[in-house]
Image (cartoon, rainbow, N blue to C red; front, side, top):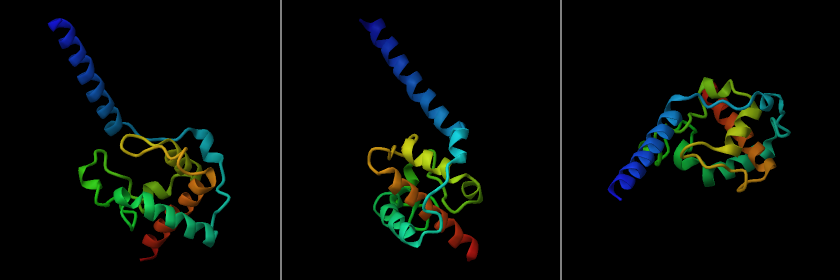
Length: 137
């Protein structure tokens, strides 16, 4: 019985440390096929406004209202939430951002079931707007 308990604890610790290591050390890259997807709401003011509403009700607690990854929940997170205004993120394709919002990773939930594909595209449009606002300042 004692041996079984030690084995189970060892397995549990391995899973925890292995998943933590993968989360913090690997690059989060969308499948290449998503890079060819085009956002149907690019530069659409109404869609951007709708994306902002979704962002401000769901994403801001981790990513911050300005998108810098400095929301109130960010301090306790590892890895830290993405800075939606960074050049690195702005260089990702719209399809890659859609995939990340859809699938989630680590502390970021998958939003595939919570938001429609159109709503997720609108979030991408709003995230793009956050990046534009930073480059204009």
